[in-house]
Image 1 (cartoon, rainbow, N blue to C red):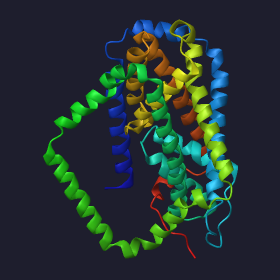
Image 2 (cartoon, helix red, strand yellow):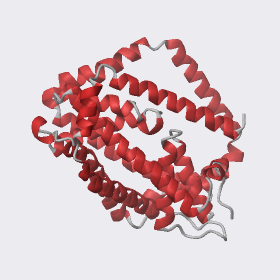
Image 3 (tube, rainbow, N blue to C red):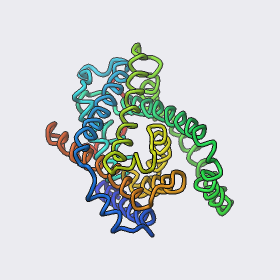
Image 4 (cartoon, rainbow, N blue to C red):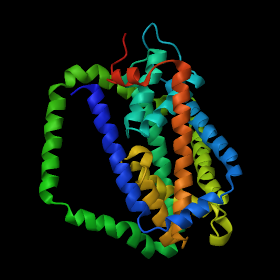
Length: 340
């Protein structure tokens, strides 16, 4: 199967899943009322919202740059990454994720590797390290959300935990056994070819180590806090745009909970969390906070849609500015170890 066919199948499958999830999220909602809420929104708040999105991208690029600086010296023709190169790569990665979930991390890795001549595997290790920092913050956000929702735990259990338990109970044990066998076979194959993969794995491990090897841990901590502060503002401003803060008494603490739970929708392999983010966010607003379903849907549409347009347009602009076609990047996505 060619790269073009695989990319087309991945993109088509992701878009189909997104359409299905979006349909499920909006099913039963008064679309006329939702469109009315969107028409009367205060779109002047788009300016600070887009400014926060841009700031979050710059902070993420800066944090990634701190990790990249901790990499061992690359090949003789390697050059150091710059904030502009990292920013372009982050934007391109976001753009690709809206077409092919999870491929964006590969795209931004390969893009920066092509610019700096560092091995793809070592750069990929820094991307994983950066994501680990976000996973830690997300875990803390979910724990703090559980504390904030102590008086509403029965509702949360009914909304999230009971459906998940029901699905697990329906999962055939035969599929679980088959999955374990496939994993075991994969481990055997990995051990068989570990000698060939050792240089690549060594480079990847060097990338992972950049979190504790970096001499600028304070910068990593500060950038992570500021990134999530931007995310909080990006989640709160759509409430202001739609005039929802007063009628529903939605505060920044409430927004923190809604943002943390909505982030779980991004884990689903649909383009940019489309559909899954909408469903979780709408259900949280309606069931936990008593928000009207049409207003909740309008919020999810704006919060997700503004970022979608910004990242896709920004990623396309970055591709044009640096002059490397996206197809060329994806064709060079196979990890390679650093050259001596």
